[in-house]
Image 1: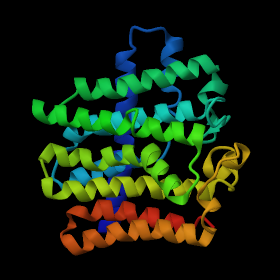
Image 2: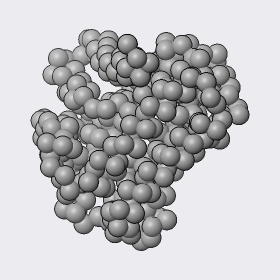
Image 3: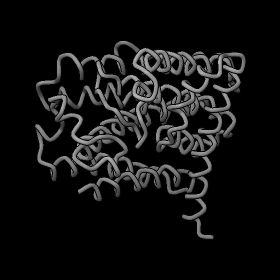
Length: 299
């Protein structure tokens, strides 16, 4: 088996790992709750996605020689939090999407009130999981929880969502800042969190930048995919057009937007190539190169 194939299998195993841990945690937490409530909370978690944020966390942790068991709390918190944002994003008062990953959105499968409470539960349990499940010294746990709440707080992720819904950026720079807030901040936690575990100070500035750039790149990719059919993107297309939102295509041509995303990925691929010739960053390189290749195939 080639090294590349081995890495692909390892990445797939990380994906299955975090999915299983998320379901296990919610099942355990709600074991004495009504079955109907458990069914609602796990519904969006069973709607399998890419788990890309958790994969970046595991790949960076691998490069820093962190055991999987010490990365699991980060990965689970990331996926619970991200799923909460998707449940709330789909609500009629926000993006008003009826489908998510090819299945009915939570508010369509159940009702709007249930979807709000499902999102509330996932948000709360994301933070609770970091508090309750820790294999780190106390001072590291405090740093990680602080970073998590900073990234998802009222002046970062939530602010980005509010800007998107309420005031809409009126410039290219404003749009990019909104994308970094609403999408980049959770990626920043995914990338920077592992470095806090090992106190890898020399890597922290770069990993923070990587996370924000990933958020910008992924959000622009989402803009580019918006015109594709539901069979490809797992939700109804033209959501932004339907909601009369400005996207990257309001400021740049499709070709220029694709070039911007590719440049963001290649920037960090080059950083790794220049700084470290060992194999420890190979998983991160694979994820970056795969994401870059996906951009080239969108059109």
